[in-house]
Image 1 (cartoon, rainbow, N blue to C red):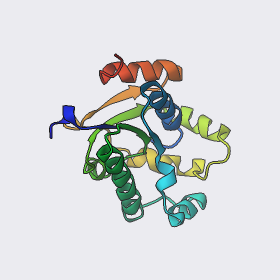
Image 2 (image 1 turned 60 degrees about the vertical axis):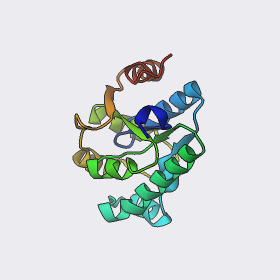
Image 3 (image 1 turned 135 degrees about the vertical axis):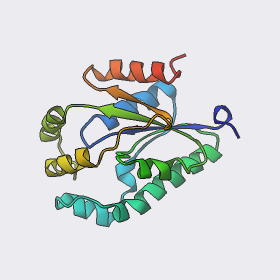
Image 4 (image 1 turned 120 degrees about the vertical axis):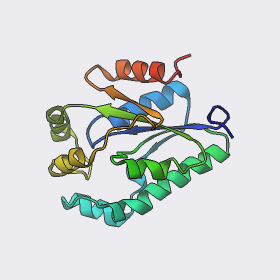
Length: 173
């Protein structure tokens, strides 16, 4: 099945604190698509590691990424396009998500690490400590030309960022 005929999964990606949740929720509301927060797919052991300031490794992330991929496929099989957050920091992680039975399009949110650190200082009730931010920026691999996706800076207000994303993806009609 070609990409135009398959449901789409928009993966709003980037390091913690870059604005994935805000952006994804606004996009999902505009498009009327189901929304998922990738953090909700983490096994308890992953959450405990991050809470204790220990970065996850590729082995830790494997079942998490597979669970997200499987959710995308279940939604797509019912005909639903989706919007979800996922750090998707490495190409290999995005490759797992692209195994889903949907057209997986990545939206990399780009922000200055100092801005993100300031946001994390203000965030309440999240298990991801600011101490892990550096490891996330170190692991981040930008989208490559052969990946279905776009990169958008998040210096503008969220509504403007969302308008830019939908326009660049051709979803603003």
